[in-house]
Image (cartoon, rainbow, N blue to C red):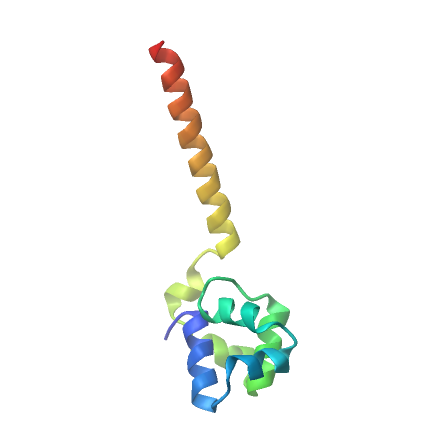
Length: 102
């Protein structure tokens, strides 16, 4: 059980493919594929479908490779938005407390 990226890397290595072979096979750049494999970017549904098709496995079989934590976590875009909101609120709080001190 692992993250999406670790599962992709394990599949690729187990089946003997290079990252460039996989990326060509699914129609994306190697850089983009490697970002997904390194858990730096999330794959879209279509991207994951293409990857599973390339490897000859079902989406369900791929999901079975993932940890319950990975399957239950928020998506990266949601986490980024939440982080930006928290940073903005902290700046506003610091700014307003600075205004009260004067």
